[in-house]
Image 1 (tube, rainbow, N blue to C red):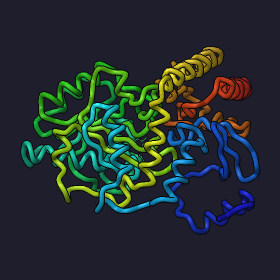
Image 2 (cartoon, rainbow, N blue to C red):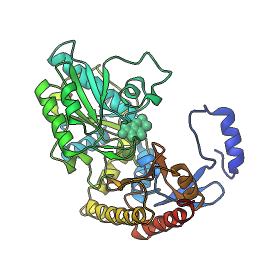
Image 3 (spheres, rainbow, N blue to C red):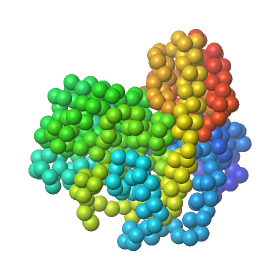
Length: 403
Ligand SMILES: Cc1ncc(COP(=O)(O)O)c(C=O)c1O
């Protein structure tokens, strides 16, 4: 382990041995507690990005630490050749609190979406015919970096250089029901939607669009897949973002916050759909291992405790109204978007500069699509911490914005 080493040396040694796939910031985080993280130089930051919506319960939550410690002493991994009691317990919690009847566990968001696409194609071929394999997803969506999921991702920049891409993917504009209506047909196996687009710029799908997607899927025997990898698990202020609407999907994917920092992903589905997978059809060596699922249970126990989401919604509304006041004060580009603790502030200019100024003043956020500041605070962020974040933003806007 690289302990007690300065940032410059970590970066130099990292550049020598790690593939150059990330545009990393010149800092290394070494410790976290609650809403706060510390870098290798001992500088403290308010973490309003939470490892990209993973550390939703904050850093070093005692219940998560203890679940990891207890399980590590017992058993870390067994493979899915055997039944895994923690996996059963986590599936029971997810099923009891969602539309779904069955779960499949894997290790990441991309793997969950890849599996969901496979499930939809298997279902379509078993129930209908060979021609039913098309997946319709949305422009500016993000579903992962495997070949199928980057193809489902409606952004060219993630696809370039990886051609030929898998066949059968096409895109419609978010919230354009007319375009969706024109596109879904007998060959459609699935419509894939993030109820709130995250990487694409924090754009929520509207109720009418979701209802149209549901109606068209029912009409043509296609499956409605929700990717709740980022917006799920409390981020929207309810356990699942789909709970804010009248529409339920047939398949839903999860990852990120489910393991509180331990890698895990999940595909949830109704019985009818899940039955398309039979032994040998899909698998993952690490998927749902005893450690990851013990932590998943601990995460859900905290989130499902009485009053947890009421409290999150209250503090999320407080944060949003603070951002709205700042957006009005500095007359920025448009309204604050998002729901609960996934919020986007369209600034249309100076996004990267503002993010960098925030980092220097000890607030971690990022900018999506180059134009929107994205906030993914811990669900447990206190009002005083929200006040600190708002004060930093205010002071930065007062310097950067009219310059
Ligand atoms: C909505 C959504 N789906 C899928 C993914 C991919 O998840 P992972 O990076 O765990 O593969 C992400 C990652 O940001 C995401 O935001």
